[in-house]
Amino acid sequence: MATQANIYAGNDIEHIQNPYSRTFTRAGHTLKVDIYRLEEEIDWLLEVVNDEGTSHVWDDRFATDQAALDAVHEAIDEEGITAFLD
Image (cartoon, rainbow, N blue to C red; front, side, top):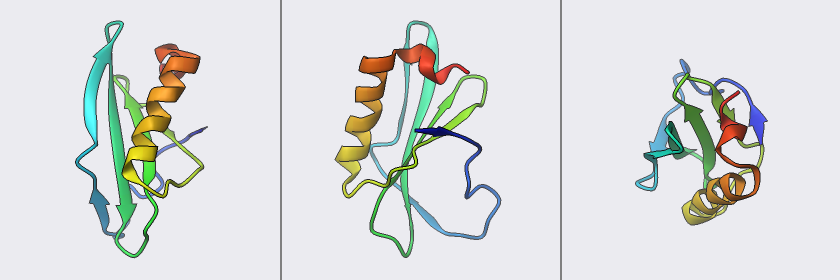
């Protein structure tokens, strides 16, 4: 997982939002989980944005949307929600 701004923000690149994208709250902190892919791509991208606007984008691409969703849950289970609060 890498921390950076959304690398596609402000570009004219079309991206397709996945229905697994969601916002949820744990331990009083809200995270927005975005799962999307570029129009010409088949792999999914994963980004988590905390309630302060800090974006965490995974370096890995995911073959399925479910794999991306599983990755964010695994990260929270292993590292805790505080890993996304920087």
